[in-house]
Length: 397
Image 1: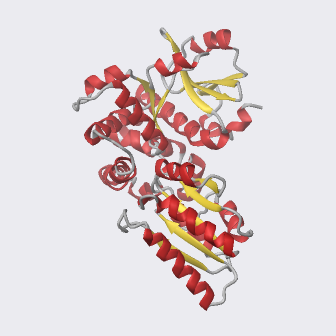
Image 2: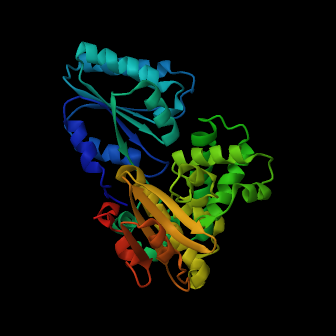
């Protein structure tokens, strides 16, 4: 990766240099480069900074935040520093962190103390929970998602097929030639801590074994529609549809796995639909479903699943920032792979690759719902290379 800088680098640098105004929260899933990006920006500024990591601190010791903050104030005074930057990484690991941060931040505001605060967190769920509860009006969010094709290509020289198959975790790039090592890294260093620490420890998960099974099965079904009732039949741990639905929502908030709803004109029909499972990073699909790149790539029908799942990851990755929602549509044997909804306008996207033929779904959808635009992505449509580098905003123009 070398000195590669993600696109959010410029924004972080700008906010470090501007006057103290809001707490800056850098949030995103594990291993997408949050700490690296902040360290790259810190290396470029002339403002003194203090860097702390909450990983390994007792989760009940929220006084650790106050002690840390007070030590920064003391050093700032002793060194006669007019302004400093305070960075706390893995902030979500401390219980009730947001209440303490709010108290210390407000104290600095009253004292006119120029401590600019940057908080980094792996769990989107925990970060958003703390922010909505305690810190309304005091923060700005900088979102860091999974690495796109453009980023993996620029940083590591990956081609499109490699990104579609191996996904976008930069730490896994050098392990790509050895499938066993690559898969072990994804499952042991990424998936296990994300599920155990970011999901199960930070949420009321009453059936952790069920959550793990659901995640594994959902990843292996990426780009497929499967009812929650059928999903229950494949899970060993007893549960119910409501529990599964709530667990899928937690996994979505953690940028791991989503259950896309069917597009419909009324909300009730959307919520009652069978979900279409969609990973946020194709590495998760490949880790559970793949054999080897060489074998999976030559099976054109199977490869179509990887391509469709990759399109889904790209759409989901930009949804929050782009202000749109992603659905699918199916009526009997007619289907449209992805429907994007933004401000009342819809786009219909059908993915076509290899031997995967077109169905009549997109024609029927156009007749029934009159989307603003309808696209084919891949064969006889927008080339995959172009789609994965486009801005979704441009599709609405």
